[in-house]
Image 1 (cartoon, rainbow, N blue to C red):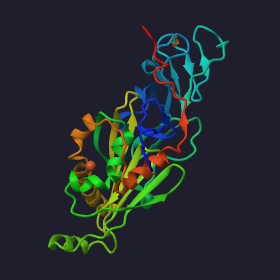
Image 2 (tube, rainbow, N blue to C red; image 1 turned 90 degrees about the horizontal axis):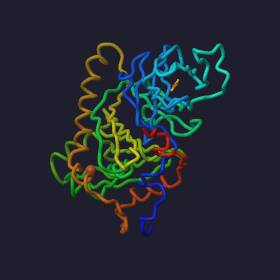
Image 3 (spheres, rainbow, N blue to C red; image 1 turned 90 degrees about the vertical axis):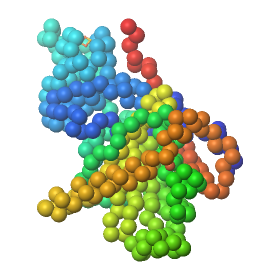
Image 4 (cartoon, rainbow, N blue to C red; image 1 turned 135 degrees about the vertical axis):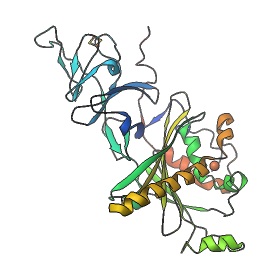
Amino acid sequence: MSALSDVKIFGQRDTVVEGWYWAFKSRDLKKGETRPLNFLGKELAVYRGQDSKVYAVDAYCPHMGAHLAEGKVEGKGLRCFFHHWKFDESGELVDIPCRKTPGISVSIKHYAVEEKYQTIWIYTGDTPRYGVHSIEELDGIELDSSFGNQFVKECHPNIMMINAIDAHHFASVHDLPVDVKFETRKISEHTIQFNNITKIPVEKWYLRFIGRFYANALTYSMSYTAGSTGSVTVGPDFLHCHIIFALRPTGEGRAEGLTILVTKKRKGLKGLLLNPIILFATKCVGNYFAKGDTEVFKSIRFNFSNPIKEDEAVIKFIQHLEKQNCVEWGFGKVRVNH
Ligand code: FES
Ligand SMILES: [Fe+2]
């Protein structure tokens, strides 16, 4: 592939790929609570109804523009703080207290919401065409999860994401003694996977020892959904660690990230004792990955003008992302000027 500097989606701050993006940790939104959220540059009000479900709506009240996160949860709906207009769970205006019936037809826009990995996810399109990112190995299994870091980085999520498949820098930055090579698997229109195919070398005694725990290639698998949420699977054959890096663009080109550590649920005492240890070990692995690249993400001006063969995985990621659907998002247009 020639120069990759004329991309339409990858790393573009004014483009929003249709998909699920993390919003809050589930525990940070209790039943009956509302919270404001700047979500990919758009202001939202997110609330948990009395039915325990989470709802996400455009922030500003269509009456006079009050922020609906100032409002009050009533049943599955939300009542604006200012003149007490009430919107039901589908966003319809159902009550104006000073009138017997509303008499006007007004609604607020709702966004699809899902909770997975103890995290609230919001969809940027109208009707979800697929689910929140899933880890292939754990599909259909009951899961346990915990959180790593929550962070903001000075570059677009897509640029951070390719770091995990930028095999070229594993040796130069992270001193990885293994030569990583990827094969690519398209899981769906929205998800692409990169699997390492090389075995651990046998030249050094400690590598020979580690190599005993891998029947085949060194397990290092990275899956990406819609270019902003990715998960890595690493570890010996008897214990795989799964780390999700959930990122969302801020609208100004930054990445807001949340690291989620996932393992299968283990029953009884075994689960009680083992799972926290596994999740803690997974967190350490995640921190190891994040270490070393901090400075480059502060100053990088991404311009991939001279790709080489060794950058193949990164090129495939970009090509996959360029086929994603983008949504009309209207950055900042819903802001109210005071
Ligand atoms: S601004 Fe919301 S009811 Fe008036
Ligand atoms: Fe890195």
